[in-house]
Amino acid sequence: MTAAPAASSPSTVSHRIAVAGASGRMGHMLIEAVRAADDCQLAGALDREGSPTLGSDAGAFLGFASGVAVTADLRAGLGGAQLLIDFTRPEGTMAHLAVCRELGVQAVIGTTGFSEAQKAEIAEIAKDIAIVMAPNMSVGVNVTFKLLEMAAKALSTGYDIEVIEAHHRHKVDAPSGTALKMGEVIADALGRDLKECAVYGREGVTGERDPSTIGFATIRGGDIVGDHTVLFAGTGERIEISHKSSSRAGYAQGSLRAVRFLAGKKNGLFDMFDVLGLR
Image 1: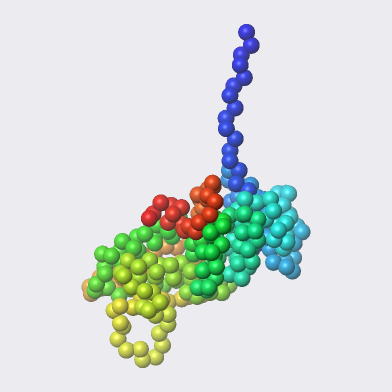
Image 2 (image 1 turned 90 degrees about the vertical axis):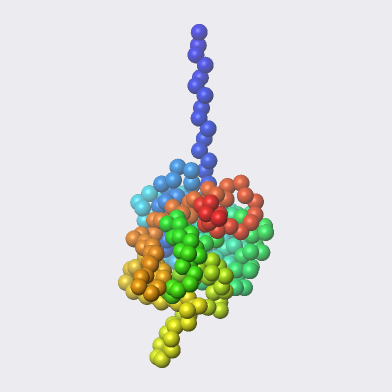
């Protein structure tokens, strides 16, 4: 009697991912993470016009042939993808999203520095495609946001709040998107509007500190990946909640969690609290 063939295990779902800024530091980290993930496949690699890597294999920096060429042609780069991961600059991301909307490609956005008008446009685009947008894709940073919300509610009176952040010399926006998000989380927990209570710099004779303000201090130098500390300074004590990144790997892994969260979603604007169930 011939034995029946063993039932085959269900195939692993493959998320076909395009990476924007494929030749940059974060782009390289994302491509490496996609390659290492059993359920992900690199399907596109975008870079700006004039990049010396255009036409080369996106996996060349790792010493392997991905079969995906780096391109500045958005439709070509996104045509075979289900989803784009974008850590570039606001103008580039907005151009990418316009084509994502046209092609029905979902997006995970880690770009920071958007204007209010650009944020409104992204919300409009999210009516047609599913988007996860967060100023920081790190799982640890988003848990830190939750801790800050809890701390702000418990330390709502008698504590001065300062957000201190440090990044590498190449970062072009300040304060960082993560620092601003920290301020927003704290302000929301306290029932304040960050636009009205934020202080972004101090110089000269400033007078006494207004206890209702949230201060920001920015450091830029070297190759610092990203350090953020929130100081709650009271009388006789201070509480510091910090997150320090030693590499961009955490951002890449958080991005892949966002990719998996979007599976099956048709539209909507989400953030990492949605991805991690932190609401």
